Image: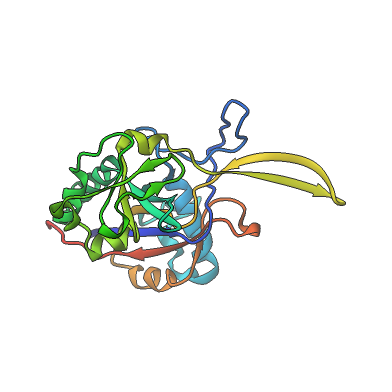
Length: 263
């Protein structure tokens, strides 16, 4: 029997999962983006490869779920979709920002996988957010400035503030702000200058796009009961995803999340 399991992924450090593309010579290394939403993503092959490498070191008994050149894997790994990303503010170091479109994608994925989306998640996905007027869900942060875009946030109404439950905080992080969907797609990601030194002399300078730490993703793994226990035990560690492990990029925490199923 196949089991559709949802996992939240929290970036503990900056993340760079490269797309192999450049930005007209301005940014040398871009991150992977969803072809439809243009939001950062982690492609299924990259996610599966990172998990395979992790379990090869820490829990090799479950490697049959990944397969090899001679035998296909027992499980299926779907791409990880962005749920929220940090945006700096004048009232807190940063908000965890999301958009109705990103939340609606999560709602759709839940339905497709025969899970019942929580009412507060549906409510957030249906919020109407005007361009340049993000909405905060806590009265403490009314009129906060979103520094990257010089926006002033307005406070959600009483009904909308009720959507900000423990379930939402677990998935999206604290200090949630909802941004207009088109605005959210257009917010640039940080770009880091990287430099290769040889005997103290700069030999190669390049620019790399990153997904900032504390960003949140969601993924689905289609599992069988066999190997589930070992997989969950192994996930107690930190999984390194993407490039630049030697400088601390890509440390991620995977958490399984219980959801109501239609099945």
